[in-house]
Image (cartoon, rainbow, N blue to C red; front, side, top):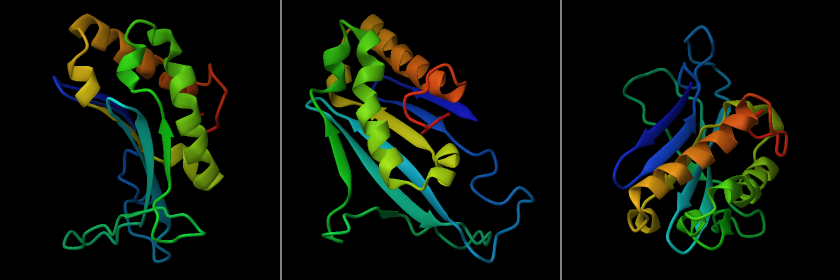
Amino acid sequence: MYTLLSGPKTFCFSSVLANGGLPADGSASSSREIQYAVVVDAGSSGSRAYLYSWPEHTGDPRDLLEITPLTDQADPKKPLVKKAVPGISSLQDHPGDALEYITPLLEFAEAHIPSEKLKETPLYILATAGMRLVEKTKQVGLILSIFMALLGFVIGILTIPNFLS
């Protein structure tokens, strides 16, 4: 399922499994596979990609997910983060550059998430601060440009990273 959530302060494109990460039969696996997610915080000064992981949910509604950031192997206390500058709002006058802007962040995620998990990894892009200052029609144009670039990966028109193809 692919969703674009929009509001006055935020938008989110997500590619999510319909069954919430549980096996196809809806039961919890005893092996508890590791799941992954990518959150891109598209702020006013730059966009940062954060990577998270968690064991597959047990199926017990009383259990919470144990979500943790992926960390640098050299410094396990340092979360893995990739920054793209300037802020995404800088693309307001040339939204066609959205693919070029977002690709390094997707490639970063692709380099740190196991390849067999990429197709089921949710991707959330949240844009707030800088986008509030952008004229509404330009906000929509930029959001749609990002959405269309990501959709190109999903349906296989674009083949840059394997992240969404």
